[in-house]
Every structure is written in structure tokens, then in C-alpha cells.
Image 1 (cartoon, rainbow, N blue to C red):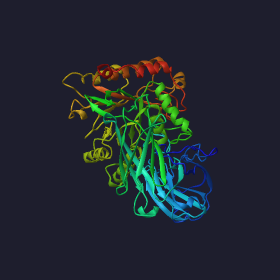
Image 2: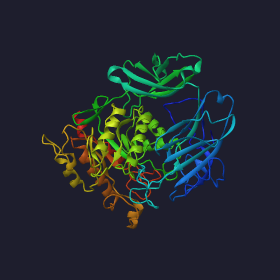
Image 3: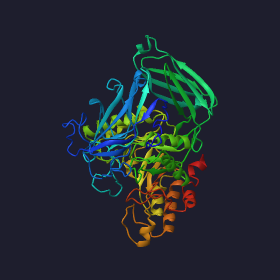
Image 4: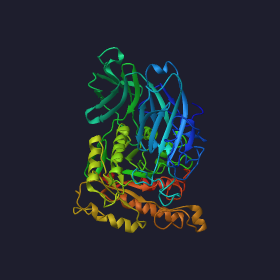
Length: 580
């Protein structure tokens, strides 16, 4: 796979040896009029360009770099199957396709998927043949419609403010996987360190008679730590799943900066997968968020997940790890993954480095009041939580961002309830920013740039007669944790400051000197750390993104400041840690 872009296996928690990346050069065509279906491009026809998958056509790395709106785009490539590969089932996986994907194998529709941010899988066994096969993908995208989530993708031709270059079509890895007739579909693992165990549910696919009889073999699982076997368990299949209890005596906890992970082997009949899990707990106690039973001040950074040459897609796997390392070097212990569902490889590195994150959907650009917007959004959100459930780095969920006061309360309540049903183990924020209907954590966005005014706004939270800034929070219990989930955004571009120019964008007035930047960031941050009612912050933001110039680093990941000074600001002791 030396010449294949992004050659690593895209699902580190679901590893099989029998897989093949389809990244690389594909035929490509832009279909402005969406006439490709009528012209039957899925059967034949000439494609005028070539694109490098998994990079979107707007990006430089794709080889296309077309920045205008594209109603639909078409992809085509061939792949070859040997007789040996044809003995089982053939699964076709897509990391993400924005927005509606129609997939054809040898001219026949294999399936469709709506949702530009989550993975999907198609069983193409009945459509393929030994030898050469043709794969065609059409992606339809309309970020201006109000019916699909677009996150920070610009709804204008140019980027502006805090909205950036769009992503259309395939933007994560495409791959084939070869499995037996009966195979392991996925699994869910719930760590329970307080009781020295992990609860494992394995979901299965395939007909019971495929292995020669009605009896299904048991599902077996083995957990390892540091290469040493810790435990093994087995359970009979009931329906299409099996439930196992893995005893973990004296569990070694996964924690911030202490990424202790257990390796996991799951076997069922002729199929086996490798994964991992972390033993850690998340709970809410006395105005704080606890990890493994102790209060942890969450020093988070807003991470937009954009890259100069790849837009939504990191150029390489090492770039995903580097972003986390840059964040930690700046004094942060985690991130709010903002208005984008990050690829699983990013979460893998968060797991491996002991870095906490909040999962969020890309709800901007969506009119969630409309049935056409809400139903696909809720469906995709369910797929997102399901896909990422097993990552110990994820410590909370937030489906929506900055929902207006006019939005229907029942929608917010419904999404909160749905999320809690999907995952009762983590806290949920109904919608981040300015409105709360039902939530486990109160949060607010506050881009006040004067540290004294900022501190004064939150001073009334102390004492018995607790006051929550912003009247939307007044009906909630004083015992609920409080999280300032966006602040700062301090605008600084050294070159523009030297020229007294303001071509970029940031919050408030741009600082005139770098010392003013340090003073502003420290004053705003100190106000939050010293407040015993505040348990978490999220600073805007990790890097500059295009015209938005309020990052700790530049868009190409170069430091803008003395990182020792920056780290000292964000990692200073917090009031809740002193109390704990």
C-alpha cells in the first residue's frame, strides 16, 4: 500500500487482516445538473477527470481543487476479485460521503446512504463476480438547502467569518473487507471499573445454517493488557447477538495522559476481529464532571478539524496524532470536536494518548424545525453514537450547536432523550451555547474580550444563592455542572498587526501587540479557572482556519506564540481541583 493515500486500516477497533483499501486514483465527473442518473453514468459513459480518493474535490490533495458548488459528483473505478475472495461475503465500506451516496456495482444499485459524516457498509456479495468489477458512486450535495447538516461549510461561494471551504463527496477511506458467510458485525463494550468487569455485546450477521447446521458456535472473547492475557469469556448466541461479562480484576484505568488500553480478541466460528477498550468511568457529582471517581477540570480546545490541503481530510494519519500532540503541548487535556464528526483514526489517537473529547454533530446549515431536516439528522446522529461508543476518549455528547430560541423545545428534548437511550454512560448536552431544555451539563458561549468584564459576569455564581450568567439557565438546579464551552477567540496575526491591516477575521477587536494577546488570554482563562462553580472550559481555537485567525497555531500548524507561556496559562490549577 506504499502508493495508496491514507493506507492505514480506518477502523482500529474492528481490525481484520482480510481487507483492501480502494483509496487512490478514481475516474471523476462533476454533474451540475444531476442528469447523470438519466444519462445512466452508473452503467457507462465517459468521465473527464481523475481524482485522488479519499480527498474531496475542493481540496488540493484531490488533484481537482474545484471550489464552486457541485450538485452531484460521480466516481468510478474497478477492482478485481479472486476465486478465494469469492468464497465468503464481500463488504464495501465508506468512511464518509457528503451527502447522499448512491453506490453501484457492475451497473446495479448496491445501496444508498444519506448523511455526510458517518461510516456505512454495503454487502455487495450478490453483485460481484470473479475477475474485474466496476464500482460507481454518485454523491449529491446541497449545503444551501437547509435539509442537511453542513457544519462549518460555507453557504456562499467564498469562505467568510467562521465558515470555510465546503466538502463534497467522498472524504474518508473506501475499503473492501472479506468475511465468512457468518461474521461479526460490530460490538459494544461498557467498562465497569467499580465492579471489576467489562460488559461486551457482540452483534452478528449471517444465516445460522451457513456453517452446515442450525447450531451457532459460541462467541468467545479474550482481553489482554501489556501482552498478557487477563481474562477470557464465552457465551451462546441469542438471536443475532451474544452478551459476555469480562472479569477485569484490579483494573488498570484509562485516564488523562495515562492511556492504559486493554487489547481485545473476539472470535465467532470462522471469523475473528481485534479491538481494544479502556477501563474508565464518567460521572457528575457536586457541580463537577468526574473521571474515574475524581473531579477533573476539562481544559478543552475547540478543534474544527480542517486542513489547508485536505479540507476535511487529514493528509496523513500522522497529522491526526500531531494535532492532539500540539493541543497537549499548549496545556489542553482534550477538545470539543466542533461541528464535524471526526474520523475514527482521530479517536484512536485520542484513546492512545489519553486525550478527552466531546462528540458533536455538524448541525449548522440545518433547519431542524422541518421534518425534512430533523429525521435524517436524528438517524445519522444515532449512527454516530453507535459508531463511536467504544472510544474511552469520548466523555460526552452534544448533538446540536447554538440552537436558536425559536427552535421547538420538543426537538431538543427528543434528541437528548435519544442520546441517553443510545448511551446512558456519558453526560449529554442538548444543544451547546445559548439554549437548554433538558441537559446534564449547562454550557454557554461567551466571546467577551475584556477580562474584567468577563470575570464579573461569572462572579455571581459563587455562594449559596447561585446565579447563572444568561437568563436561559435560571430554571436549572445549582448542582448542575457549568461549562463555558466557547470563549477567547483572541484575534492575532503577527503579519497583519505589523502592517496595521485587518484582512482576516476574529472575535472582538484584534490585539495590537503580542503582549496584549498574552494578557487577554490569561485574564479570560484565569477568570474561569478560579471560579469554583465552573468545571470546564473550551478555548477557541486550536488553529487558524482560512480567514479565521484566532488559533493558538497557524493553519499549517506552526506556533504563533511562546508555547511555554501558553501552556502555563491553560494548565494552571483550577479551583475545583484544589477543592477535590
